[in-house]
Image 1 (tube, rainbow, N blue to C red):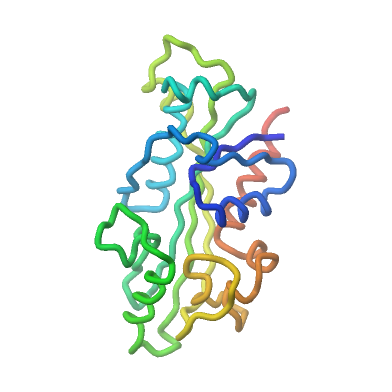
Image 2: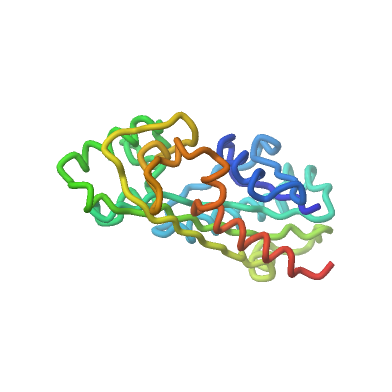
Length: 229
């Protein structure tokens, strides 16, 4: 079994990741590491933010005093993802700002309802055929060495354990009003191509087969399947 520390406290996201990965993976979260330092997501790309989160958390686990005391697992990986919605009529917005789209302070996330309301307001004059967009996800994976070498430097760590990244995309359109009770984020507004219902109506079984995060996680599972035992 592989143990992953997922760089989030979002219970919805963690549940989705665990369901897609299955029983061969044990998922920990930042709730297991309350002393973990926050990471400012200030990169201009999903890959940049995911990599920054994964590397900084891995460095803290390997070299931070609080982190060292908690690394007692032979095989531990840090998994960080950055994902969001790109809307063509808004020139790709909200993009990397998806989680904080409605917030005045761009370093703090805003409520899903506020983000959805802002998106609908900006698109209210846009006809259906132009309400196209896509969910994007990039996952970054960084290993934690089994034995922490006290004399090693964080710089060497980053050089020796560069992040692997895995991406996924799900195209669709933004409907005129929210529908459905499942999912989170923009799920009630997003209808994937080939369907007439939103992610929040389709339910997790369907979503976990075709979502952007599901695609990225399938690539991650394939990566692990090819690692030497």
